[in-house]
Image (cartoon, rainbow, N blue to C red; front, side, top):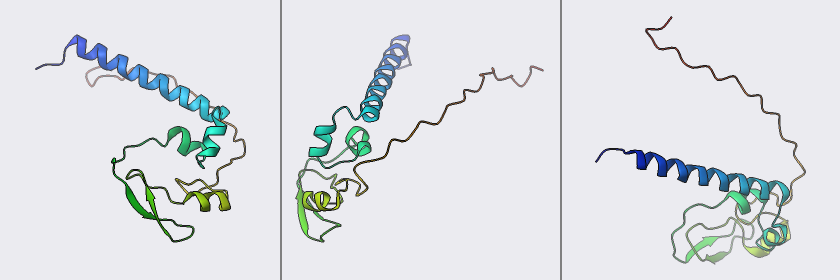
Length: 123
């Protein structure tokens, strides 16, 4: 099977949708658009808006890094802290970092001009 024009088109459309979704997540994270939900889940902005990875669907035991007790989690992507420790420490339960961040200004992006590459035989 060879790569067809339909394959190119569908892959391009899929990537465009992924890009659109990434921009939406970025905007939600920047404005903290789901702050109440994020705080209820004891997570920092990064883990709540971008920390969606793969996890096995099996209850998994883990040791809380805060109180050193055995805990149970609903999948294999276990957090670092239990809910009680995350609350006491005001920390993100997933990564263990601070839950609230100061506003961090964006660094300006300097776009470089795109120049077509010269082929070896061109001067």
